[in-house]
Length: 262
Image 1 (cartoon, rainbow, N blue to C red):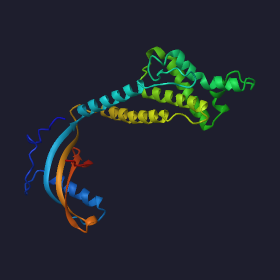
Image 2 (cartoon, helix red, strand yellow):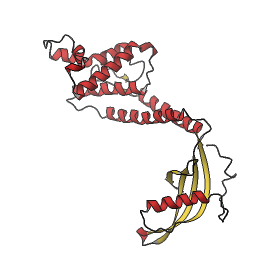
Image 3 (spheres, helix red, strand yellow):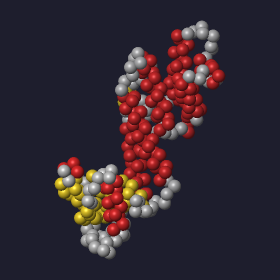
Image 4 (tube, rainbow, N blue to C red):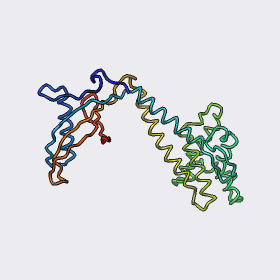
């Protein structure tokens, strides 16, 4: 991370006095410590205050992009199989998810329905399903949504980005359903793990989208290390020395805390 010009070289600790330029930050920490104590008097006293670092938008964007890229690579490199064909491979990769394979996945529920109920009066289950008036259960709504999404992918296959998170989420949903069908509603735990990873990556992507509208050199936070004493009620009011990181925004407000580790 870049060091803001506000910080002295070597991150020298500031000696406190009546002209201490960081008194506002120290007072903010004192209020936060007292607030966390829920009214218990801790007698906070700051001993040392150091500016540690500054995080800029462009640095956070790079970190999040790396995190997103690594996560996507992990998912698209997963080697497994799906029980409708048992062909092992990198089941989230572009090489595996061909247009033909996507069509198979898309048609799975319809094919199962036709094999189970060949004379139910509906030539095509999906034709019936896609008419909302025919089924409004949560299951129908979800299946309808997933079929419509895959149809849009198949129709625009040549220009589609296979690492799109919404696409990976949809494919995982279909894989889990197929597995559930063939395993008496007891699908492999791998699908939930992948779903959780996709959710985490969606949060990362959302953060990136939020940062995209900000100037690259805008400060996200200033990081400080505060050493202070309190009278800890857990230890019968015994004096305790604590070191903790505090994160401030440009308005001198605390936006985060982190425990200090030697």
